Image (cartoon, rainbow, N blue to C red; front, side, top):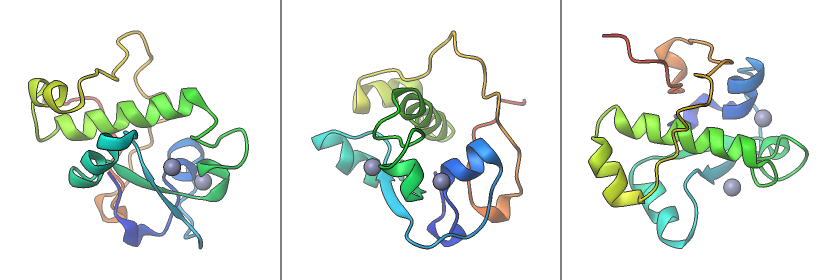
Length: 124
Ligand SMILES: [Zn+2]
Ligand SMILES: [Zn+2]
């Protein structure tokens, strides 16, 4: 989902449009749980987060269920770019894309070279 070389926090970028390089980013496996951590690794469903967005504070994914769900949905959308829904369900067993959630209000398209894969709506 994100190229580590970016050096920015996925959620700082995603939520606040801040793409600054930061030190001390922590790796976060988006679909967690014992087996899922390995699967997140295998399919690259992980992001790099600043402390504030990882474990400390109100926007930390480990405390904020809404943001966690957002990341899970992002991860699934990333996966579905190159795999089918049937594959997702057979591997992860759960659909994280909430049909009633508004489509990525905060989505800010950024150039590819930043290496962050945000999940734009399909444009055929
Ligand atoms: Zn952050
Ligand atoms: Zn984490």
